[in-house]
Length: 124
Image 1 (cartoon, rainbow, N blue to C red):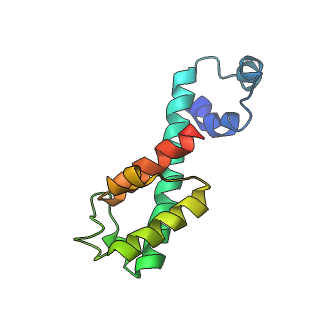
Image 2 (cartoon, rainbow, N blue to C red):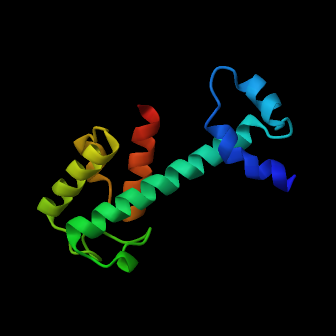
């Protein structure tokens, strides 16, 4: 079972329209598509989280240890409106997404930003 779990990341990159055949080919018959979806979601979230945190550290010139899931952009990082607009533009460019103003206005914390970007990526 451990060996099978280690193959999940390799198998994910090959999943396409012939997923059933590929599951058999990799010997992953005991892995459900739900397991694959959960892995893909967590992988996407981690990638988004790392990229967003990097952008925040660079743009706001803050220590990476200050950028936590619950960190508030205004109160904890001292971001003003101009900083926030620049961050939104950076997020849009980095992830090739469009962030509508009403959606961006609801974001208060780093975690909110990560979830927002993740949802917009999934809608692409």
